[in-house]
Amino acid sequence: MVCSPCPFLLMDQHTPQPERARGLQMARSMCWHCQSEVTGEYFCDRCVKVQPVSKETDYFTCFGVPRRLLLDPQKLETKFYELSRSFHPDFYQTKSPAEQTISLSNAAVLNTAYRTLRDPIQRAEYLLALETGSVKDIRTSPPADLFEEILELQDTLEEYRASDRDSDQGHRLRATLQTEQEALERRKHAMEAQLQQLFADWDQLQDAGEATSLARVERDRILKQMRDLLSHRTYINNIVNDLAATIS
Image (cartoon, rainbow, N blue to C red; front, side, top):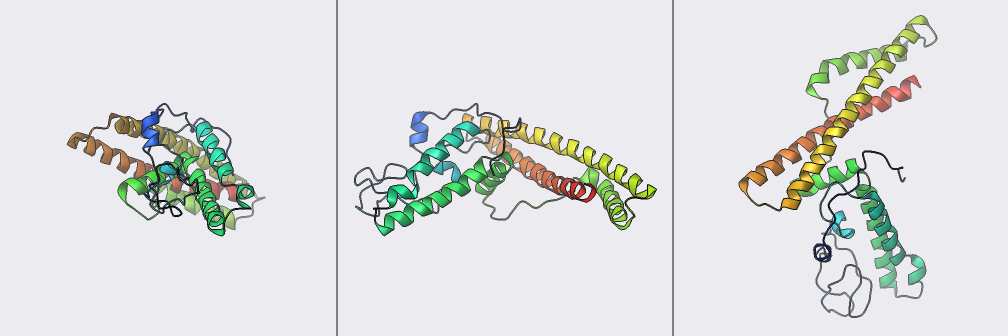
């Protein structure tokens, strides 16, 4: 599902340099067909055969972009459609079974990569997995300052589900839940604003390219704060969705 543009999808202010993009190659060195050195992204320069995306290739590399969090959604979409046309089945009807299999596999990888990178939250979660080496999903947890409030909210929610919704009590509980839902949505938006700032901080740190101990400390700080915020945001978002489904 392609989301409509929203303020949270900010335009990328860090345009990759051509030589940098050229260096983002697929993680392989030899063409499967002619065994010559592969220097392009998806096609061999010598025999022009389509090349498979390596399992070691990350989604950023698939689109020829660096590991940044403020990507231009329009540029990403344009690149996606450009690559999708390159692997369209119509172009491989007369090709060998090997080329047909590779093109279909590449198309599947690109679809997954695009779904991940076009969404700022999924993009951040994916980058965290790459940078920290974690293969587990980010664990959802409630913000510490909302723990007691959320427990009370869950009790109110259960009471509403067990009540006669057309009664005065049902109307009162529903109004309370609506107020809580609006407050949590505001909290979620505030978290997204914090994440947006962390995304900018991350990109700025990567663009600086410093390898000092201070830069490493800052990198770890940003990654930890992003992980915590993403965890809290997902937790709150699940509650908001539950509230909306219950009182709708």
